Length: 188
View 1 (spheres, helix red, strand yellow):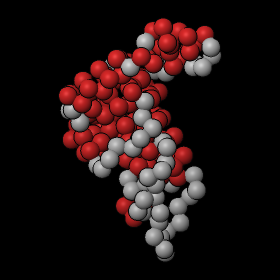
View 2 (cartoon, one colour):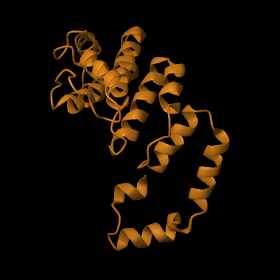
View 3 (tube, helix red, strand yellow):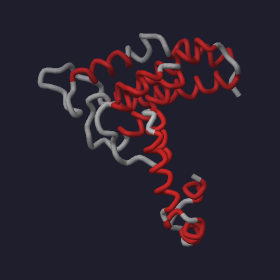
View 4 (tube, one colour):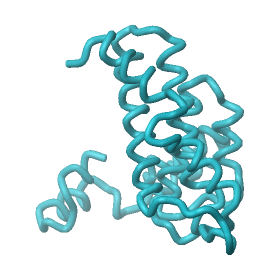
């Protein structure tokens, strides 16, 4: 288990602008100039690993901020960590390739991080920009509805999912027994 001091130190170091060669600034710059995931001719060269690097940084900041919050650490520190995680995830999705399967998940992670930081307007804005990408699990769709304050939509989604025969207990048990689904999927 990490101590409050270790988590605080990590978040302070990881939140500095110069971290990983100004990774966050590079990610934000790339997000501003690309269109549908494509950089214009003559654009600066960005590392091939920038998406992976931004995702790793975002998840690291999110994890450490959650742990520090849970441990009762300094609120300003974990809020700043959540905000920086949101920035990283936002840089991943802004003007990104529409066919990127992880885009919806990263958008939700960014919006959730902003929300945890206390920036509900940024969270709402990130989720309401354009059509929400497909490939979302029911729980992710529920988070989108909550962030967008679409309780009627959440109610419709929940009712539809709960009344779908494929989600009934006996069907889940049958699919689990036939090894069609993973036990973790059943729990989810």
